[in-house]
Amino acid sequence: MSTINSPANSLSDADPVYDLIVVGSGFAGCMTALNFLEDTKTQGKAAKVVLIEAGKDGERCGASRWTPAFFRLDKNNKFDSHFKNEMKLVSNGLADQAYCEKLEAEVPSTVKFLLDHGIIVQHQDERNVYLGFNTGQNFAKGEGGGYAIILKLFKHILSFPNVDIMWETNAEELLTQDDGTICGVKVRKNDGRFAKVFGERVMLSCGGFEGNREMLSRYVGPRAEQLGLVAPGLKYNTGFGLKMGLQVGAATAGSFHGLHCELVDTRSSKPEATVWGHSFGIVVNEHSKRFYDEGNRSLFATCEVIAYETWRDQKQKAYFITDAPIMERFRPGWVYDTTDLDPEKGDTIEDLAVKLGLVPQELKKTVDEYNASINGKEFNPMALDGKSTFGLTPNKTNWAAPIKVAPFYGYPLTAKIVFTFGGLKVDLDSRVLSTTGTPIPGLYCAGELSGLYYNESKVASEFGILNPPCNSALRCLTFGRLAGKSAARDL
Ligand SMILES: Cc1cc2nc3c(=O)[nH]c(=O)nc-3n(C[C@H](O)[C@H](O)[C@H](O)COP(=O)(O)OP(=O)(O)OC[C@H]3O[C@@H](n4cnc5c(N)ncnc54)[C@H](O)[C@@H]3O)c2cc1C
Image (cartoon, rainbow, N blue to C red; front, side, top):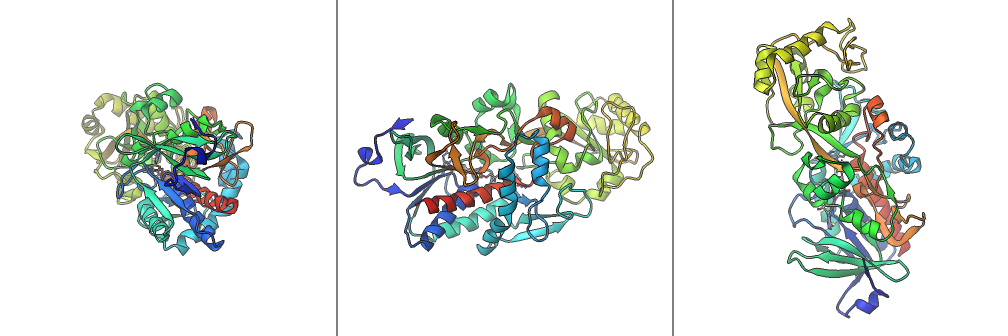
C-alpha cells in the first residue's frame, strides 16, 4: 500500500483529482458511475469521474458482458420474496439477511432504472420446467443479455463530458492518507509501468478471483486450477479488488473456499455451454456410477452442487444419460441446447457408452438397476413429483423417469467456474467495512467482489444449493446503483 500524507503532497498541478474512481466496468461499476454522474448533475455539481478497466476497449471483459442475464423476477418486476429465506437456509444463517432484504426492496427500482435507460426486460413463463422460484413460474432476461445492457449503460455514461475511461489499466493498490482515508489507486498501464490516479472516493467493482489460479488454489483448494472459466472475460477477474481491500484493513464476507460452477459440455468450446437438464435423467461418473441425487430439488437448485461435486470428487468427469422421450420433450430449448453440440446418441445403452468413452457393461448395469428401482408415480417436470427410486445409493428423489426408449442420449460434462464467493464486507450503502466494523472513509464496493454466499457443505448436500441462481446480476446492478447514489450524497 502506498501511503501519502495527503493527495496534494504527491500531486503535480497537472494531475486531476477525481470525485469518484470506479474500478471495473461490469454491471456494478457501470451502475455506480452512471448513478453518480446523474445524481451529482441533479445536485448541480459537475463531479469528475474516471472508470478504470483492465480489459481493452471493445472487448467482452469480465462476467457481465457474457451473462445471458436471467433475472429472478415475477411479471411485475418484483424480486423473488423467497430468496432471503433460501439464503438463510443454504448459508446456515451466515448470509447477511439485511442485505438480502434490501436487495428485494430495491430490485424494482433497479429494473425501473434499466427500463428508463432503454434496456428491455423480457419476461418468460416457463411451461416445462419447475423453476422453484416464488415468481409464478416467471423469469426475466435483459434483451441481448449482459453485453447489450453494458453497451446501453456505457452510451449514457459517455454522454457526460466529465468522465474519463482508462482501458487496459489494471488497478493494483489503494492510496491512503495517513488517517486511512482512501485518496486514489495505483495502476499498472499497458506498457507495464505504474501510475497513480487520485480521487476522493474509490469504488471497487472488479469482480472475484476466478481468473487467478494462485488465489483459487490458496482459497478454494488443491486442483481448483482444473476448473476452467465458463466465459473468456473472467480471465480479467484476478482478485486485485480483494487484495486491495485486505491491504487497507477491510473485513470479509462469504466463503473463500466457495464458488459457483456449472456442468458444461466437455466437447464444446462455446462460452457457457451448460447442460441444465441433469434433473431429467441420470448423471454418472467415469465408472458409470451415480454420485448425486439429480432430482433433489429444482433444476436451478441443484445445478451448482452437482457441478461442485463433479470437480471435488469425480475428477472433473460426469456423463448425463437419458432417452428419447426426455429429449423429445425438452429439445429444442434452453434445457439441453445452451451447448452448441448435439448429444451423443446410441441405439442401445452399450452403444451410447462406447460413444461417451464409458465401459458398456458398467453403464448398462447402472441403467438397469435404476430402471428397476423406480416407483409408480407419474412423471411431472412442473412439480416436485415424488417419482423417485428406492434402494439405490444415492436415490433420485424426483423426476426418476425410466431410461428405456431408444435412441439413448448422453453428454460428457465437466465443471467450470462462474464466480467465486469470498469478498469484501459492505454495508447497505455499499461502503466497505473495516475489520472493526466502521466504514473505511472513501471506499465502496459492489458486485461479485462483495462477499455474500456461503459454502456450507452439510447444508449444500441436504438442500443442494449454495447460491440460489438468477440473483447475482440483479444484486450487482442494484448495489452498484446504491453505491453511486451513496457516493453522490457524500460529495
Ligand atoms: C457466463 C455467465 C453466465 C451468467 N449467468 C447469470 C444469470 O443468468 N443471472 C445472474 O443473475 N447472474 C449470472 N451470472 C453472474 C453475473 O453475470 C455476474 O455476477 C455479474 O455480471 C458480475 O458483475 P460485476 O460487475 O461484479 O463483475 P464483472 O462483470 O466481472 O466486472 C468486473 C470488471 O472489472 C475488470 N477488472 C478486473 N480486475 C480489474 C483491475 N484490477 N483493474 C481494473 N479492472 C479490473 C474486469 O475486466 C471486468 O470488466 C453469469 C455469469 C457468467 C460469467
